[in-house]
Length: 167
Image 1: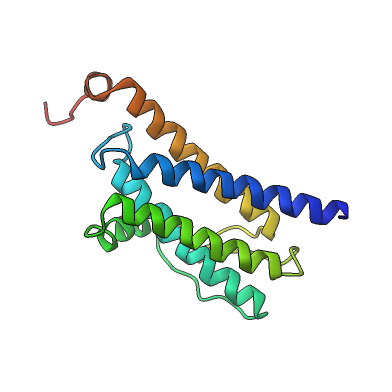
Image 2: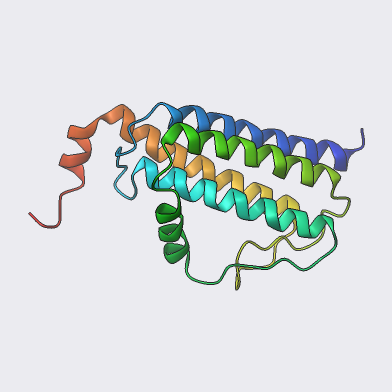
């Protein structure tokens, strides 16, 4: 295996590991767990939402086509994700995340040119496939660490630390 292929495999493996960890965590956590920024449901909803987008974009890259990108701020798009998946339970969302990861990985394994731009929404900075995989992985890990800390500290700590602005 040449160095470029080994690097790709490592990136895909690391992302896959992050998805497994996230799916396992979110499948077994209270959807209302709040990390001071978002609930577990909000986090998982937007991870699933974006993974569907990454799959669609990777498919267009595989076909050497220009992807159709979403427009709007991240806050607006993440809110849209929460609304879109509000009727799905956490276990179902976790399974969707894993399923989309399998599709994304398959698409990326068949993509020969990893030097192409892999955008994720209109107006995002240019970044190649490897860079996008790293960015996606870091994003998932960031959310997972924040949610795990909230889970380990417990609801009382969260309420004490993140004061309700209406009080």
